[in-house]
Length: 88
Image (spheres, one colour):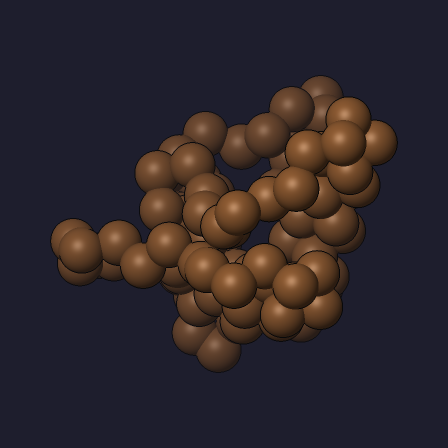
C-alpha cells in the first residue's frame, strides 16, 4: 500500500494491486492493518464511524472488499459504501 518512501501509492498503482484476483493475502493484511489504524484513530477522537468507504472506491476492489466488510461487522458499523460505477 505504500512505496519505498513510506507514502501511499498513487491511484493507478494501488488500483492495480487491489484489483488482482485472487487477492494477495499479504496485501489484504496490509489493508486490514491500515483500516484498523484508521478506525482506532477515529475512536481516540471519540468519533463513531457511520459507514466505511475508501478513497476513489478502492475499498470495493477484490483485495480490500472482504477486509472492509469484515471490519465493518467486527466494529458494529452497519454500512459499507457500494459504488454505482464499474470497478474497471
